[in-house]
Image (cartoon, rainbow, N blue to C red; front, side):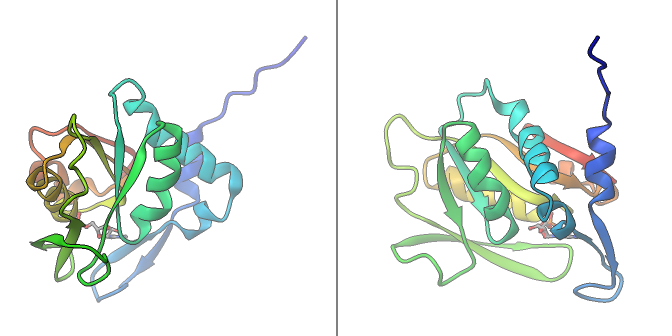
Length: 182
Ligand code: AMP
């Protein structure tokens, strides 16, 4: 008789995220996902968990946020049979761009998207993907960028949520799904 071994996937993923104190600046506890990425099995489980809530959402494009968002965003797009639209730091995208300035947990930043990224008709139904949801500034700015160029934001999917920074507040009214909450 086959035995079913139940696994606590969330606990396994959590154990593969490393805390690095005072990186990149004093006072920040950095969530380092590189041990999780280094495990083929845990990486696959993380991608499955991040994609699952949006399987029936009609996502046509994943917007992946530079840089760690690229690592998760592209394979999630493949799982959802969607395309990838990169959102990058200024000066990296080759064609005409739309830019947004925003505040983040440590400092401030700017992000750009190609102006024609969401031109196809009907408008793309976009899932925004990043590794960590902290204050929500990055994800909120990305949602605004997508909407400015004509996309429809279906939701936001992040592996990690730092609940004490209330990132969901910055994304009020949007669907936000995360796998590991701290
Ligand atoms: P925020 O805009 O504050 O939600 O910050 C989210 C962005 O900054 C994501 O792209 C994360 O990769 C990165 N980030 C912010 N805080 C942390 C943290 N404590 N550990 C790892 N990455 C972080």
